Length: 389
Image (tube, rainbow, N blue to C red):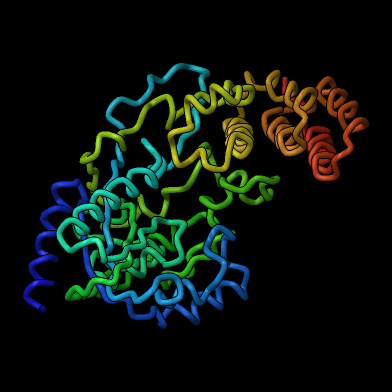
């Protein structure tokens, strides 16, 4: 029995490479009891994002989500970190940027395809009575915990899985099955005394031991749908989706740039879009330009809001007419309020015409949050000193 299982495992490893899976590991379906205290503390402290699976017990005990689990197969796909042909720099043309993990085709779709092909192969080799539960990112289990126990890498101080070959630039997924496989050895913690990611995080979201205050993370903030809290706006810079800072500074990521999957290759105009056209982009054009990317999962409004913030951070005076139009014409309070904030950052001196425009807008504004943003923008512009002649 052991010989057969080992032989099947070897066949699966060989087939995974043929399918295009960059790394694969096997572990038991034993409970992840070491996570319980961390997950409960995260919830109690309000450090969770809200995007996670809600039932903590189901994140810990595979038997609660799968009948007779015996093993978990963990897979990783490496993704690119550099763009070969970035858009040309044009004076006065401001662009935003998507974090690397959202480049190319939505990784959920790519991973599901790889897992389905692997499952089809296993079913052919092991018989139809074998059962499976594939999941990626939005499933019940904690991907990095499964991957670490399956020997793919270790969880770094930034909470990401760090692999020897590809650093942390990998997408993860797993398959629970009722098959028995010999487990692979886990990988020991490899950060040592290094705290570069913790020190570099602009919002203090990293707690230093692999735990994250998700609500403080810029990646999370770029995915929210409401008004972005003031402290995060300047720190967002011009990255309109996600955040790569803790990965960029990690020594394990130095020189890592995998180009194994054509569907993951970045499209310059999608990952570094012009910001001003995003303010008025139609639903059809948005879907055509961004719909295939994981960064589009929250829809158009968060990315438009982020584009407005990025224009403010750029201090792009050429964007003022577009932003004033947002306040006058856009039906969404988040867009109107954020545009007011951005205008206040761009205007370099007290500008009576802008103040008058915003004062008129304030008189018509019925949404409390947008009202507050416009009111604060008026005060900020009033307090600016006149330019020295």
